[in-house]
Image (cartoon, rainbow, N blue to C red; front, top):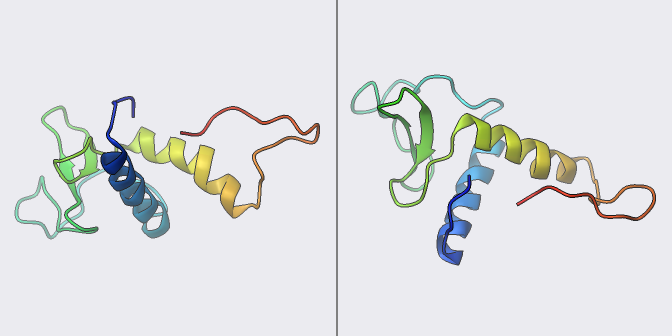
Length: 102
């Protein structure tokens, strides 16, 4: 995600991302069934739902901050979540900080 966000929106985006990471092993390739129409899912987190965009992309969002797509989900998991779960201090053996993250 490369959009400038206010602090409040950044917190909301990150909270939604962490919900996804903790509750979904993989980002859905299609909108989960059960919503009001096939292109919109039920609410999963606060007011966040999976939505099929006109471009055919599935995003997770609340229509207030930019939606989270598969690439965002995969990048966050790789850069932030998995190193945390492994106890990685984000530094290599030489003590130099590694780049990446958000």
